[in-house]
Length: 314
Image (cartoon, rainbow, N blue to C red; front, side, top):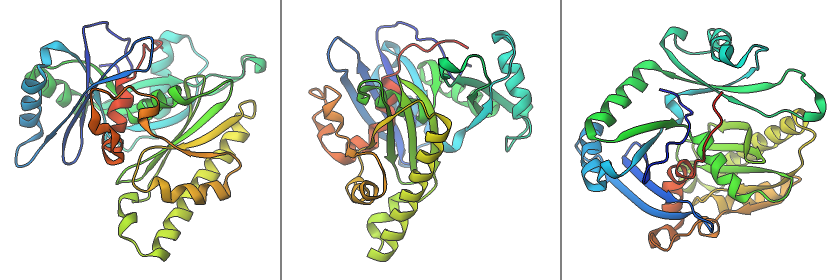
């Protein structure tokens, strides 16, 4: 299965994400106005297996009504930056696979590979550029395909958080300027930089942000300083690599700790730092629970994946 597939125009779409505590589902309808959140649902695992919980979700959501997108979690794949091979398009994946063979933490023969191009500065001609390669274990992909098929979901696309966050960022971009977006969850933080709706940089910051509220003042300050330093380094790298793109701002995704991060980041970065309220870019009339910050954080990635538009096929 391709990790990045062309959109199939069916009646509806539901994104399914398997988290540690259960299954999150989200559906969004695109129209001429703001994208409308049509559905949010959570199915806790409890003592049940993920497969049994997915069966329950399929029945409750009437799986036959939807095409299904599945969102992987950060630990279930690797996203690697590689130099784009100078080969015809139909040979691209083979060439990238060869370059990845010494970069993965598992054998290349056991990998499902997809590629994501990073646009280049048109004024620089045909000089070499970087692209992203996504690698997941064949066994994982096959298991998910079987599990979703048995539950009755028409699984069309397997997606990743970086692309989901890119979709949210596309709603926030203004003018001909790039945008940095930092989201936080229990395991860490994900920083993406986008421009004209394209992903240019992704960085996972492996700092346990979920533990921040329980820390004392000194520990909390140390962790926030670490995050700030990692963001600074990433922005500096981006400026060197893509000097022709000007960043408008850094937006902090909905989180209980974003308000604490903002002052530190504002003092140490050269761009404005803002907090994101999903209600400012999504029509949430049908899901009043999304008014709460913790609900926005919980469904942030699933909603981002549900915003996916048709991708170019490489």
